[in-house]
Length: 115
Image (cartoon, rainbow, N blue to C red; front, side, top):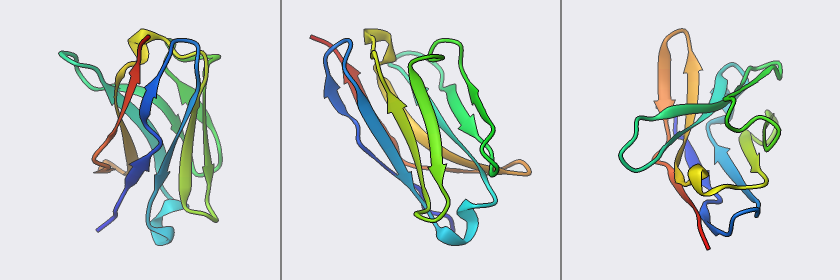
């Protein structure tokens, strides 16, 4: 099965930056749409950003202009560069791989934005 492993989460002050990484199988990475989702305490999981196999991106309105999603199909890694972090960005961030209604998920990495 496809294995997705996130890293890069942690504690950061408002206005700070973090870069999340998601590494997966090289055999399937290049043909899957990849995405980042997050789930805050007491809330539903929501879409943060997606990136297709050819690099087309989509962002939630709440992160536009602050977050950047990218992928390296050679390194089999997807990234989420998060700048100007806000307390409302606090959540567990999950890596997702999707193709024709088939989804794979990582276990998540916690991002906490506070003083």
